[in-house]
Image 1 (cartoon, one colour):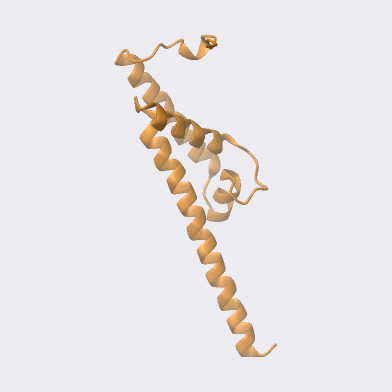
Image 2 (cartoon, helix red, strand yellow):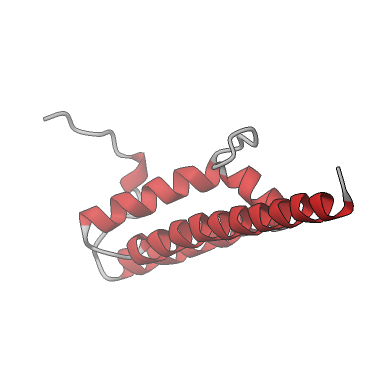
Length: 115
């Protein structure tokens, strides 16, 4: 492989890495946005999206290229810190709902009713 070919291969790898990082950042940004929109929302659809994002944040699987752990490791982001921030935001939103009378502080302890 000549010098020019090596430079082209390096350039291709560089652009692929840049595109991958941009995709990973977009996935993370979208999950954070869904969580923020839904965590304090009264809209059931937005709340479900926030719950889905929360489950994604909680997953410890680092083998899947689209996993939270893998994305954070690739982007150099501390996954534990993001999880802690998400948990604090969730607790604050829940406390605000309870203060507004929209939720019970014991709601999570109540058994689910079957319909």
